Length: 454
Ligand SMILES: NC(=O)N[C@H]1NC(=O)NC1=O
Ligand SMILES: [Zn+2]
Ligand SMILES: [Zn+2]
Image (cartoon, helix red, strand yellow):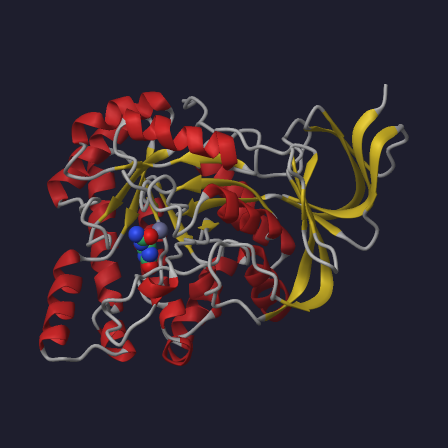
């Protein structure tokens, strides 16, 4: 019997480190990893000179469909992800409209994803004061977990969780065996500081950065951890922008709290000076910090204290990314395509981060945390989700596939071009000098968290 696919002669980035081996695929799954596979295959890839990574599992993406597909949608967003080596992703409950707060919105978003997503996808449910009674039903639908904002989300239809809501939501999540993800910035700090700045007519980049100081994150992280400890809920701290936030998570984990930490490529790549220079394309919340903080985040990542790196891809149309008042501009960075590029250039090449650690934060750890059993690693029986990368090829990122032109990574130079991406053994993306090729026949499937094992 012939194999479906044989990847020959590549360097496989396994959880134990890179190894030179062949990789064989049948029915979308990895069926052999061996020095030499001698079997006929319907498709063979000569992967000599390439590194084979597990497909990126981006646990933090805002595709905004339905309702705000003109900001970003499944079609364009997942092309960008695929071109960056991602094979699965978890979509946030906002900024789609309606936001994903009940079973009906779940069904609607799921249908859009199944029709248009090029990649496998899971759906986060929202945790807001509006939908506490819906959480059990959302869990039954198969949400990945519940996402809460501790400060204003930017959209009134997705209100921040007050302390009681967050606490009660964690109790419900604990019952359902699901993770709560928090956007951890103190509402008291951010609200007051931004109000004062705006009243005084201070609305520039530095004024915005100063309105969300690091203590804002530390305070909210501490409170979220306290609630997780009290309720026994699993907590995932998204987009930590400071090493202080990461350290608080590590300390809590050491005393038995079930907490994981995410950071994003933008906190690892850019600094405040870049935000001043580039402007709105680098506006996000929490904001990008100084160079010392960036280095401290890299140190934390190298020490294994950061569990996952997610893009927090959150684009908006150009008119929302424009204007004099930096507070009024949409906060969100377009980064779906460049997570692996940043980790390879800034991490592997510039800071000696081992490849298996990059694969851990980009693929293995998010797959484990959200119980996506068949995803995240090159191992027997896993889905054949692969990113083929020419590690030493320098290139300038010019061909971007997300919806809008405004992308801060346009024109950045990286080493490590993604040559091709395979979803369950099918090629979904291939780089070509004349322009990327996407396989129209590939379609993503809904991912649900596996049942909890005791
Ligand atoms: N609503 C939304 O996408 N918000 C994201 N954007 C950002 O900069 N931080 C976020 O949490
Ligand atoms: Zn957020
Ligand atoms: Zn986000």
